[in-house]
Amino acid sequence: IAMGKGKRIKFIFNPRAGFLHPVNYILSVIGHYFPCNLCEYDFEHTQFRGHATEIASRAVAEEYDIIIGIGGDGTIHQIASVLVGTDIPLGIIPTGSGNGLARCLGIPLLINKALKLVTTGDIIPIDVGIANGKHFFVTSGFGFDAVVGKRFDDSALRGPAPYFYVGLTEFIKYKK
Image 1 (cartoon, rainbow, N blue to C red):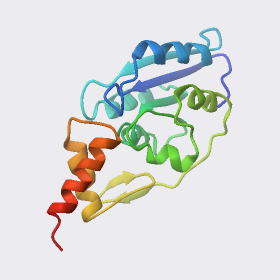
Image 2: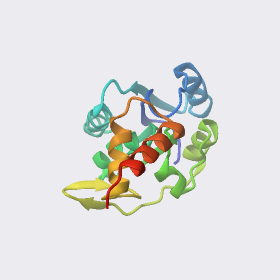
Image 3: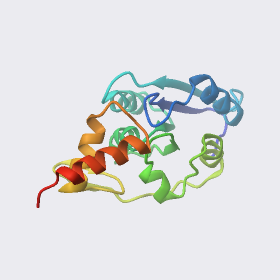
């Protein structure tokens, strides 16, 4: 993404995604890759489920040039769903438990490397699926995998270990 003068960038950060990522660290890395003399950026964190959708919708209405999501697949899904059909590119800084979309797109999982890619990488269009009137990116499921995903989404715990635990407990309870 060309970071020329005058670009307006909205960062949307989900502090609950994946493992803890201190806001001060993220802001310092952002400041390194996005010097304020080259672009203007705002940083907001989500406060509740669905808040990323609200922030992204507002950013579209306010005509930001780029929106960068910092979070997991849920956060990125909320933002990307708002951007479908617009010309606003989405940058992804994966900080979630699984980061499925970022992995499929070859986005580095380290914050500083992902931010560097956002500033130097190409914008690539991706396909979007729709099921039951909702967008999905990379994965969609039904049956056992959907149950595991829903249970994990409803859980307060994050990270690979809780995801594995949910999958194992659902597998034990699963009936054909």
